Length: 256
Image (tube, rainbow, N blue to C red; front, side, top):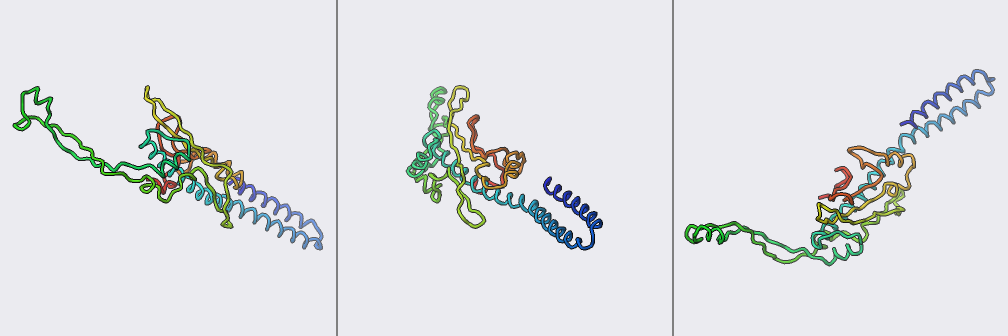
């Protein structure tokens, strides 16, 4: 917005100056001034259009790239949660995580309600369950079989490549970003109970590496309900027990 205002003000000042100058010059020089004036008008017009179009183009590219990276973070979180469900902890080794997803299986469990004689209570009151005694409700768990984690949740996802991302430019050519998603794990102590935690981070600077520096700097300072606050896109945490991401809902199209 500031650039837009400055261009307008500079254009007005130059036009006023040229209008004043043309009245002071002999008529034979008027055509030269007019040509110069038209050139300046064209230059200011180009800069004005660019000042308006550049942020719009940046927003479009940013939204598309953020969506791609956040989709990877969501898949990464799902893989980590599957790993923790079965092994009891997260992992910071993407190759180990990929191998786990390819080979691990979930137990298919059926739970059903039932009731049995409450032997302790019946003995205490001298009763018999078959003749007016007490019963208690229980849940019976049966394992029906096992199903592949890969087939269930990740049939179309290459877990080994989830830390890397690339984009396409205006010519539809693949552009590899200079950075990648970092993955760390840790232990959080709730009282004295150790809890496995993880965090995955993608830096905005790496995602927007080929965009105008001024617009990147503005984005890194973003603090908005409908935007990704801060300099990084993050899922999970190394300081608290959470698997949430710091992105707003419009980016989480693949989140379940």
